[in-house]
Length: 502
Image 1 (cartoon, rainbow, N blue to C red):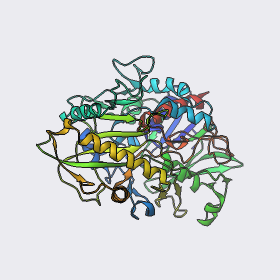
Image 2 (spheres, helix red, strand yellow):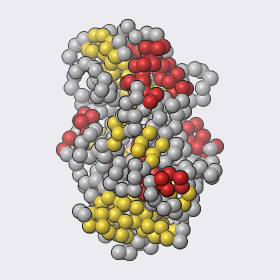
Image 3 (cartoon, rainbow, N blue to C red):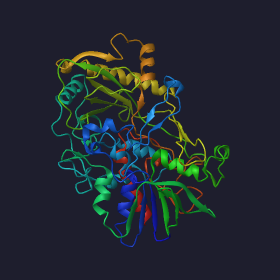
Image 4 (tube, one colour):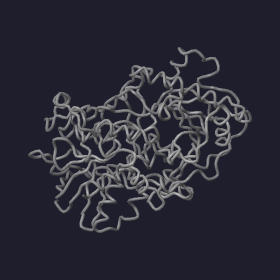
């Protein structure tokens, strides 16, 4: 089977973009392989239902290894397993990081990936109304806008944050990237718009685009230093495909690293330990795993809360905790339900002032449990492996409490349940954070861009030491930007398609 020019592995957020953009040229014959189904349950389209998708049939259902510095427990690690990937199960928040986040990528060796380099691709991905056209796109596939029919709790959060001294901004993805604002949501006419909805489904009738779902990729076929193709299975039948051009991995920070490892591309010592022949000794594959740690202060409500109309989180604050910082270092947001890990006791009804450290220092890894491609990888986010992250979360918790205890919430606040009013000293708060902190689902970094020996891809996204193979997804980010990552993933994929098509 050699009738394709490009094979794109992974039909998630990035893969939908890359396949759609490459197939705009009728001379490019493109095959997109997705391990999940073409569609999911009806509630996948319903914005307030997204928490119910965690652990469902459209989630890979991953869990981390036990986290010694975070209470010793494993954590759930949801990733979308359906066309559209995690954009089909996420919280639908659409926001960019601060410009300095991307400029730091360039300083670390990712030439061509600074803010000004990415701005045209941010704009190309989105369709907004009323924003500053110097920064925001107006005719892209993703239709994003602030919440409609917002919760009164969101207005209370805005008033509370301003009341304790934080500034308002009209658009955190625009010129002024610090403060409190209504953030954009990828909700269109009351329904989720995933990357598959925006980019792929409108062009499925292209004769040069083929999409295979329920297709589990086993490994890359590498011969004489070149990725010749892909081995995968559909319905128990094993197939191989050999494109004339390139293979592009877009399986995300877990999947792309896992497939490189399964193909013998990664740290030689680890590969030999799990019985895989070494094709290319790349020690950076699967390293540098990180995410924004997320926790929250949870309150019971003094009155009945209105039913959620959107994604449970309509407003956000990106703020600096000290004035000497160049960019915001924490994010604080309202969630209009009690949001906490399933092992934590909490109220059935209430709301959360959630918070996250935007520039975590700890780094984890993705490794193989064995050579079987059907086996879940070993995911170690290494929560609180760096003490600076605990210090940052303590500061963020105090900011969240200050906002949550503001008079603006007096009509809504009953009592603080978690961590609880009796927990005030650092020892008690640290213990709470070890138990409550969970993934924010912004996983990046396991195939990072760079030019140093630990980098996995070069600035053109080509895998070092293997011709004909690129990676284009969240895994290539050297560091996580100070924001939810979905908008950045789309921009990376837009630029990846341009690089591939050159």
